[in-house]
Length: 582
Image (cartoon, rainbow, N blue to C red; front, side, top):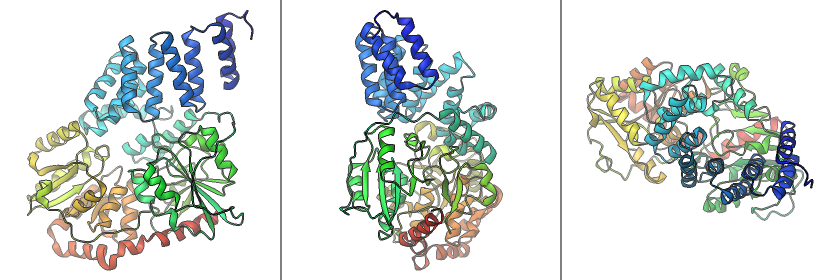
């Protein structure tokens, strides 16, 4: 340790190390510096920043808190809010960013993080206020523009969206927009590709320093692994009450254990679900508390033939684990409906409907097509009569109920306009929507009222436990699909309980999933090429009972859904596809 260096010399040396991506050397310099300058808050915060960047959130949190012991620092509070957002500790994220703003009311980064936290907490109105505050200061603040667009999507404020969307289009290629927003706002494959690849390039970080991994986990007592078997791992952060879990819950036990050893690398899971799943696989490894480096080293130690990422780029992913290729083949599946934009995914599991071969140029991953529909599900159908009544959910008894239980961000003005036209043509029809938030409800009702549709013809359903939801869904006569981003799990839910779904086949993955599901059941007639034919099909099924009954017969005869989506049959198709890439 050089006690003769001044603070600026330490900072200059640190900057040089950071410019060459030598983060551990930078950390060593900062640790030397705080021994000489223990009250220098900036040094303590930067140590925390390096720990965060290197995938060590707990150490980062400790140093930010140490900085606050020295003095009230807006940067320390704001950095804590980022950590808590990453960990989905929303209450702590809100309080930390609010404390930063108390110190400096014009602190833009803290305002932005507070808006993100408030949105996740369902406080949309407050989130919008903070984003607008940022844009009042800087009207071209890119993150704020993206955030406001997303808030307007969730609150169905379509009147304000178009002006912002033009600005977002002008930003495509700068890496700021997340791929998920890209596929939710436009079907344009070229735009989706540019958004994803530029985001990936901007967010590529060097792999963390290798440390000795700590093995933790459970799994069936299978003795030593058989080197002759094919080793397949799944990486997932959604083994809880989440669509990915509901779709995959019966997949893992359906693998052929005489040929495949199945490993689950899981984080942020429900403990009850963990205990359920670990008995279905060769090994369940809990990586929740491991750094990305440790998790990657553990995965490498198993010498997997294939690692399938079920989270991909959705929120709270662990994509950094994959950047140094911890398995021979890395595959994207289910978590994100489109290209990730990253080069380390070798394949994406898909099918020829959602991803025709001529779409390949818009993907960084090679297509691994499954025969039939790409989407797994739990393999359970329930075509029994519902135990619920329409009165229980404020639905008119003698009405035609047109349901859509997709999240509010999937709705758009042209789709809802089409639904309004359907209501005008069918006087006894009602729209049944999932209640998402108060602003969305107000905006949807206002949209309908300005088009002379009474507000009582739009009925909102509260979120309920999944079992009750599937039972009440049987009360609907028909499910209406959304245009740009289809129902995925929600479409499967409707079909599995015997309710037909009408869709418009779009141009990109997210807008073609329902078509794939319907065609796997032989229901091609429910897949429409444009919104006009979509409208006509809905009206036809509501007014022509013979045609509606033919569709119902196709959907329900001989329990066809369970037959086609049998988990054993699906897994055999999946395994055959996986064998082709080895």
